[in-house]
View (tube, rainbow, N blue to C red):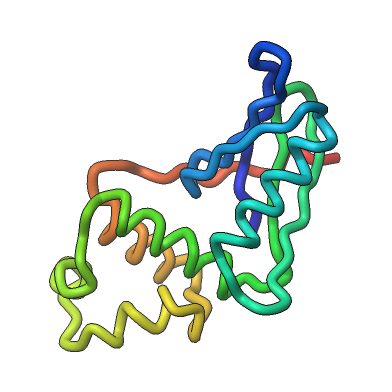
Length: 139
């Protein structure tokens, strides 16, 4: 699983973002900006050994991924839930689950959801938006 990002010149700095994760930073050079986005996500995930890999694209486009898919998907779910101001109890109710643990195990990175389950989880934490999966633009 990879998430798309955008890098662009803003004044004398390079601004860089991964919109779905709501992470934005900058660097003095394009290379530094790529290093900064990886570092920012790694620090926010705060899990020992967690590393982000950046895949450079064409123009403003790039992608990020991690070999630790559980931690990356957990981070996305947590960021989306917090962005929407939802509690674990509210997400559990939206999922029609009986226990908070049913959702929390995904947000804690203890379980990796299937694509179908991931879609359900994203809908529960972000019901006002649709998420579009696209084929990677990498060669």
